[in-house]
Length: 539
Image 1 (tube, rainbow, N blue to C red):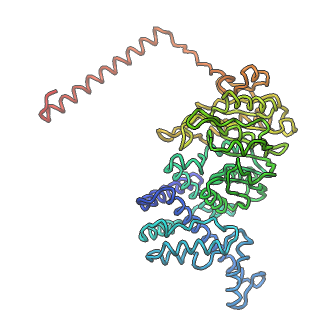
Image 2: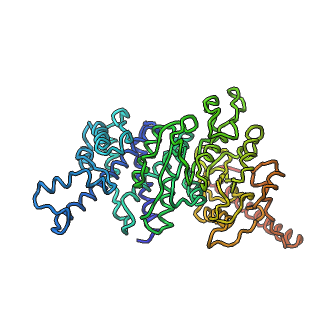
Image 3: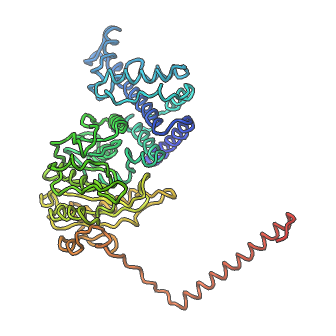
């Protein structure tokens, strides 16, 4: 099957599943339904992976040359029910009453909600890594048992095998795609709350392309559903051209406990470690205090104000200062530069960070301006990118990307400590809905490649400024702009292509076109009058 056709089939499957699942939601609040549906998708994934491993063990048990060869029925049963034979292969052991076949057989049972809760409890009990991760909300959700049963039947129809064509693809790839599709749709459904756990995929892709995480420690201090980690693992697979050799240690923290569960399930589906995903307020209770990360990729809350200034005073993470909070309802300070300082603190000596910020971080004055000046004077601001409007599902606040490189003289790329690349990408987007824009893969590549050229990466041409799009500015030029980092100040306005058509010729052409429009207008008016007349009305 060609890749394009497979992608089209998968998209069709996603839309079918989502449409049917939405019909079954009824009056259930989307925030609760989200956990219910994602939990069922995860259960189906875990059970299918378990059954695949089980079939492998049965085949091995029949081979006398295999270490798994079984001579008796009791030996075979012991092999198939040995937790370690699954866990050692990064597969969850699924006890009988958590298995998909068992639940499908009981899909019409009036007690199916309790059976689902019990299935989640048992699955956690047999897999210590899942402790506290799975939703156990099915009884409390009070969804009619007929609809829960129909939801199980819906996901029972996933034939993942038609999407798997080679050994580098797995059940997890299919379920991971479906899981991501549902997260994206729930994010749109939930509005502002949805933005807490999901960053648009095209933004995540761009951040990952800028940072290029290949090996080392990767950290997201506002990790939501874990999309930054999943995309980073995809980047490594594509870079290495296979699924082996991934050497990224994942660290994350997330305030919302429900989002932590979603994140851990997401990582588990993609067969990534979630041991270091912690729950808590990153700013006031940093759970990775001693971490020095090689890569930080994140989308923290825009203009976050709910921080305790007194608790943070004197904290070594904030050497440039803390923006004071003001009276409630006033135009008060926010945590933008607390987050930025937190990222800088947690970078290793050669670390790099790419993160989303509200545009106000580029030009705000007062204490924020003072902190920004100090950061710029460290010579670590490597790139600033203005983003188009309507890129986020949950906010219309203009946003930008910061890239911080802790050591721009480490020899990996050309030395550029006192330079910063500015990219104005506000006009580079693809409209996908009335209130939604996104980047295409080609547009992501265009932006990321400009950054690669600027850094002097092997295999890329020499960098050149492009008026209206990109410009490398020196520290002196930034000082002249009073340390304001808005890209438009540096890149200028693109040259408008000169109109070579003589004025007289243009007027003759436009007059002729206008005359044609008038003629068509009169013809249409006559047709409308005739139609009204036939109906007995006089216009």
